[in-house]
Length: 284
Image (cartoon, rainbow, N blue to C red; front, side):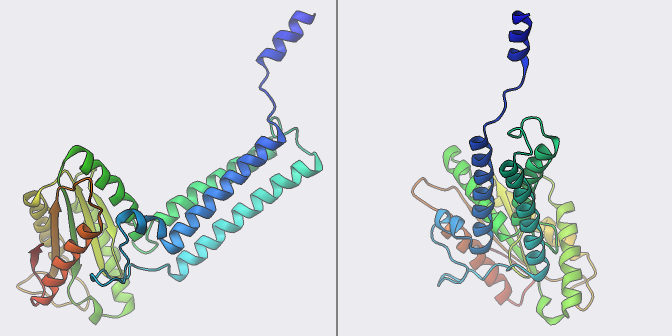
């Protein structure tokens, strides 16, 4: 009899201690808040990129800010998270769960909070209008690819572009254009290792790992052809094509460097493309 009891005890899942459960809750709250602060202030990536600021003297424009839809989504996710954690804490306080090990409702609540974390993480990296990565997501990916390129001594290229004449059309037409261009851009960029983002209000960025200047120019030309064939309400074509300005910079990073100058060089090339009456590809 005792042997059976002992065997049963050995196969039973150990009950989680209340302290451990509360630690998990605290960890999830910490992760959520850290993610939220990163989204709202972007200070974590600025430091790793090299102090680059969207309004610094080197000419980087302010990236797209959280719009009303994003703010509402952010608040909704936060509220769900708070509601789920409140239920879990109440269950622990009232003793309505056996430390969370056998109570299905408690486990459901615990899993829901984990889902909230994943939802917030995905939200923080995505542009609400286009569905592409936003500037915050781009900065995080850039740090990853920059470190990899530095380690492997590979070239990294950045293509930044915009459709000329964007500011001359209405807000509704602008939003339609951004969504259409985003969709076409996703179809145009073929390699799964390449990374697409909405860079600012009207600009897009394509990060190309293990790519020299020649490869980047091929991608840029493909963008100009594919997106140039689109019809955008309110924007006149130039020589039968939608006018597009593109800046390109390719570089093999050194261990002592940070990505700030890499970003600035690509953006300066874009500015030169815009200044030369637009519809141009400029290399930094």
